[in-house]
Image (cartoon, rainbow, N blue to C red; front, side):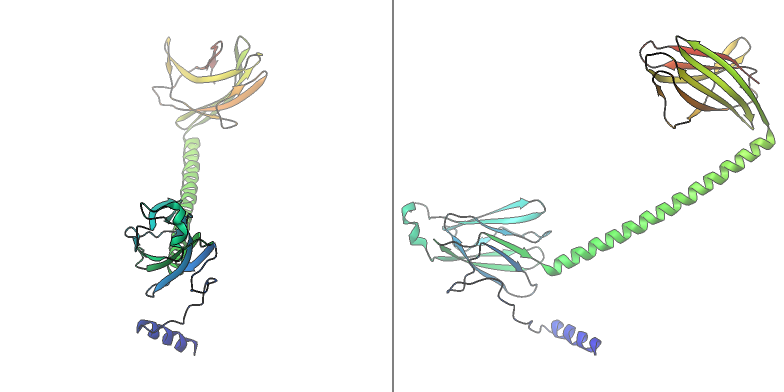
Length: 320
């Protein structure tokens, strides 16, 4: 039965059947004009949208269009000599400002002579809806704001937003899943690389080397050769009352009598490049790719300060 009723309504609408008469949306005066200061009117596509309003001379009558809709052309004013119109924007909404005015050359003191004069304004929205405003100019209080609603268009906009949100959520979920899969794959490859490196070569030595320059101390605690990489566990300590900010850390390998800089990645224990106050420490791990050509019997850690005294500390003799 419900399906039959729905089909009957759809068939009636398709055939152009008349919709039930709309209820009055305002308080009307004896001539049928709305006169409340603020009104809200719901537009109906395919029907005659006509509103009769009373507007006081000397005031601005503001018509606020539905969100996302605009007029396709300037308002068509019936008698421009007594009613002016302009279009404007308020945020996302287009508004039409209408105000009664005396014809050019008429004495302002004769304003009462316009009392009761009627004119009209026609608006055509880009949604295809037409609206006719029948306006009576009066010396009495009248309508100052007319808020237009388009329930059908608002429902479409809401549905479009829901679809966009749904698509966005699906895309975000897909990327989240891809990121999880990628992270798992990277973790797996890392473990495989570590296992391969350990099988290839694994050599670690505990050391305790130290160098200091003007109360800036560099420690080395451990050196490991795993696979094709060298790992150096080191720490910076600031014993000075002056704050220390790191510029860079260099790692050097000795070839004969010369020291050559090595490409290194440094992972800090707290994840950030250190800035040290008095007696603070920052521990890091350097990872250095090693080949037969770059392998050295002894390595040097060189710490540079970025400002202040620009201290440099070189810790030599880091070796197995």
